Length: 184
Image (cartoon, rainbow, N blue to C red):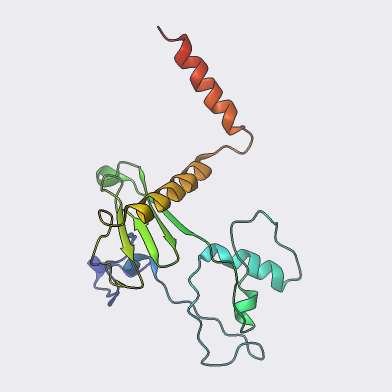
């Protein structure tokens, strides 16, 4: 989650630091040492989430991760292969205190694109990480199609995260609709 800029850490060349959804707050190097399996000095540019460790360790232990798990086993990467299924990377932070008011703020990365905000009150920003790796040019106003696609995907992640497993989503909507009808 990046180094803390107020404590003298430097995340250069990436923008910003700890608690930020700019890459200075998201990019963290990851190293694995596994003699006899991973060649020393080898590199991989895969971008993933720390959640990916759970299915990785399950696979290495001989267990099968659940099919609906929202994480990817890194075992193919550890074997020098690739992971064929790209996916959205979703990030959410919730902070307390008056600055954030206990509200969350989110980011989503899909391929070369990132849609993000750094506090719950700022507008969403859009960056093309391939063309602008230091996130200097907000493209939200000029790339509306990408913005809208990612905003829709981001909302779906937020709704999924706020869902209650034992409650049918349509039932909640039906209750709200019935309450609205009863109000004068």
